[in-house]
Length: 383
Image (cartoon, rainbow, N blue to C red; front, side):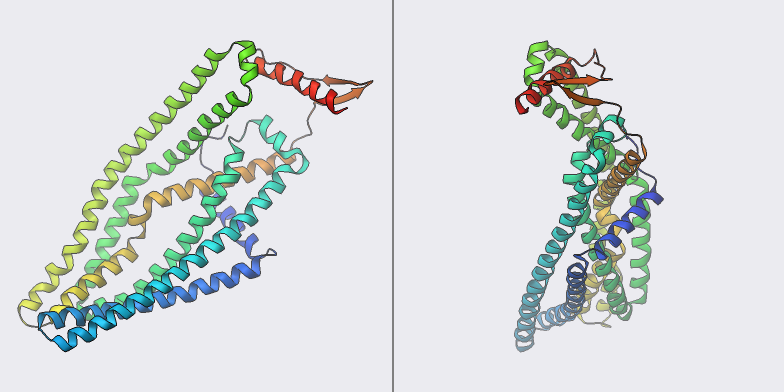
């Protein structure tokens, strides 16, 4: 059974292949149009965030200077910007979900076709090279399409944020801009160091979760055989062993997450105070308006957040790497199964009888014999 992630280079090539297949398929035109609409909406959201940053500065300055007319005017601007941001954001989310569904449907249909062609489903099963192909087709494809789009959008949005808010922050304080870049770089490095084990652990967790679920399904589907052969004890031992393996894996994951949370929580809290420590003295000296303090805080948070994509999304990124690797392993197993020779099992119906040639019974699994008998009775009913 597969137990290790597929090499990164192979995974990356298959990821690019999956994207290319969508864009060149019969639904590629719709996908491109929807993606172009998403990009346009992201440009609009980013521009509105910049406008909101300056409106917020003027709003706070009006409060500090007790200017009622300016306060009312900026409050109206604030409400209008928030309203447009809300509408644009909801539409962008809707388009993203529809595009993810389109991609999932396309990939699932293709995976089902490949899995059922040329008895691939049987060869993959008997080869023992791949665990839980059903989960990979049903769940991992869904996670892959949704998360891929989410990361593409986040990456593009972060790039726009860096471009626009770098200028805003530099105009306020070049020192604050340098601190933001250095702070985000250090945070990303430490997050990778502390959270790197999660990739392998999450890979194992998905397999162990699926193994436990498949054992329960096997027991349910073969309940009659288990009762006849009185192997409840064996089934219980198997289930509890898989449960123990899953619990050990989850305990390790929670320990790594605990260590990572200590760092990321402190990292996120410091983002709120660093701009004030650098900008507040200038306000006290009368060099800037009060609203600049809040503007610098918002711009610093936006810029650091854009640079800190790894810090904010590391758990999700590690899970995504696992999903891509598992789908890569599925395609690898399908391709390998097609290179193998055909099955040596032969089914021959003669004079109303169903004969099995070159079939052996595993003494460890009496349910296999029972399944053969049941298969024969079903064949006789059909014939």
